[in-house]
Amino acid sequence: MSDLAGKVVVVTGSGRGLGRAFAEACAGAGAEAIVVAEINEKWGRATVRALKATGAIAAFVPLDLGKPKSVSEAAAKIGKRFGRIDGLVNNGAIATGIGGKTFEEIDIATWDRVMRVNVRGTWLMTRAAAPWLRKGAARTGGASIVNVASDTALWGAPNLLHYVSSKGAVISMTRSLAREMGPDNVAVNAIAPGLTLVEATEYVPQERHDQYVNGRAIQREQHPDDITGTVVHLLSDTASFVTGQILPVNGGFVFN
Image 1 (tube, rainbow, N blue to C red):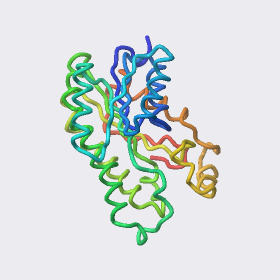
Image 2 (cartoon, rainbow, N blue to C red):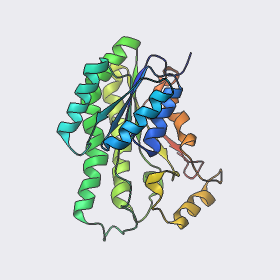
Image 3 (cartoon, one colour):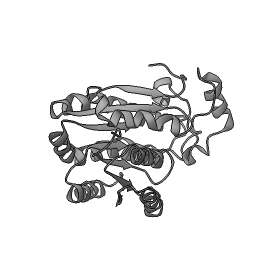
């Protein structure tokens, strides 16, 4: 039996990059349906077409994590169509084009935008999805949330304080949510990937890529496929008793 057979999985920010890779991995693991929740309709529908081409059931739902109404409407649409959520991957975040400034150079508007999407958006999506996750857990005995943090919050990457702070908040949120949602048999974990070769990291200077490669126990570039297996595992029944954990998936750049 496939790892995710019979599960409805929602992946935010899955129009491209890691989010799309997570959605494709869930389809490959036999998920009953994958919901592509994405702010960019063109990207989101492209992911859905690719998933359907493999025979998967997939649906696009527009989602702007910066807008509470959009989040609540997205969750309502998902619930209405599928009646439950078995797995939620909180992947959507702002990462592109915000690095390279010291903490003194970051402007307030950018700081607030990063926090609004990366921190508040993760909370809002979890809150909106919670009733449907509980329905999924009641049906099968358990449901799962995987929050996508970053190993930058574990080693303190410089010149990226707003992003690092937001991902540190996601890590803390994961632990608290695990306590609150445990009684409902909803597991909440986080992954902390290292610098991964996707569209969102194309702006990252080569010296930062080199720093990661040279500092890893496994000294090579990181690709989406290096992370997807961990996400599928955390969404699967085999990890149902794992909760409140932060898994650095980074080739050994940071040990936890």
